[in-house]
Image 1 (cartoon, rainbow, N blue to C red):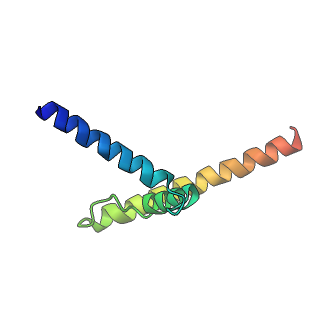
Image 2 (image 1 turned 180 degrees about the vertical axis):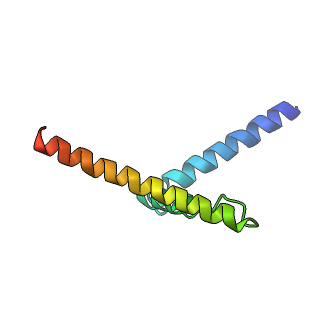
Length: 83
């Protein structure tokens, strides 16, 4: 009986999540992705008690983001030039 109750609770949780993610009045995919990237780069998941870890994470992730964007721009220019 307990297994059935757990299964029903899990099913309801999944259905609520799907409804929340597909709700047209909810946040869009772009807004959720933008918030996720902003939270990632600003080190929301880092330990707030350790300032060095927070700033080190922010600096490292910002450098990584800039490097990725730079490589993407370089790739586009490389493809456009046809070299």
